[in-house]
Structures are given as C-alpha cells and as structure tokens.
Image (tube, rainbow, N blue to C red):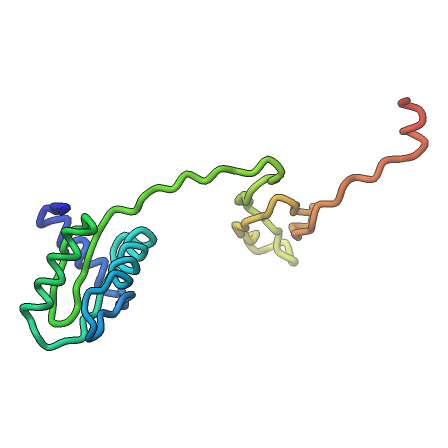
Length: 156
C-alpha cells in the first residue's frame, strides 16, 4: 500500500473535492469487475472517488482497505459512503508512426486594429500539421505548392 504524508493527503483531499464518483459499488460488493474498473480509473485519472451503496460502515472500511492493498493505492479520505483513492498515473510512452506528419504547434497571431489607433489583438492558436497562418492572420490549410511546368522542364 502506498503511504502519503499528511501534507500530500491534504492537497489530494482539496483536489478531490470537485470530483464526481467514477465507480459505484452496489449490493454485490467488491467483485472482480469492480476492481478492474477501479484499476483502470486509477490508471487514467490518478485520483478518483468511489461511492459505496450500503449502510454497513465496517464493510465499507474493509472494502477500502482491500482496494488499497490489492491495487497498491493510497487511501486519501473516507467520508460516509465516499472513498477517495490515489495512485500515481503510469506514464505511457507513445510511439509516433512513420507516416505521421507534424503535430500540433502553438502560434501567436497579432492583428492590427482596423482604425490603427487601438492596440493590436494578440491571440494564441493551436495549428495542426497541415495548417498555416496567412499574412492577414487567418488560418488556412496548407496546400502543396504548385510548380511551373516550364521551370520543371528547365531544371531537368
């Protein structure tokens, strides 16, 4: 089971405050499919809330401890029927395919005001690999440049 310092636990409780429960444990209890769902949610999010439907407090505590022990997660908070769990996200290494082009890039576009007396507008935009910014500050898809038939004949 993962151990957290009180400061880390406090920060995680604050971060979990706005979260909604991602996994619900029903009357059938802690089944294998529920454990798989909790594990995949922890891999995806790192910090999750689990809602337990059941009035037995001792059973909820036992489930909480079992989940933390089996999934190597840290117990963050147990309030009523809500359990908050934390496990650091696993960093997945993504390999780029050979045929993939350029990725997304951030570009700053500065457009002068129409009257010329006001400040220019500055916007940051994400461009895809096949897009470009025109001289007027508009975004267009990049097209392959046309080459002259005459120039091609001269270069050969």
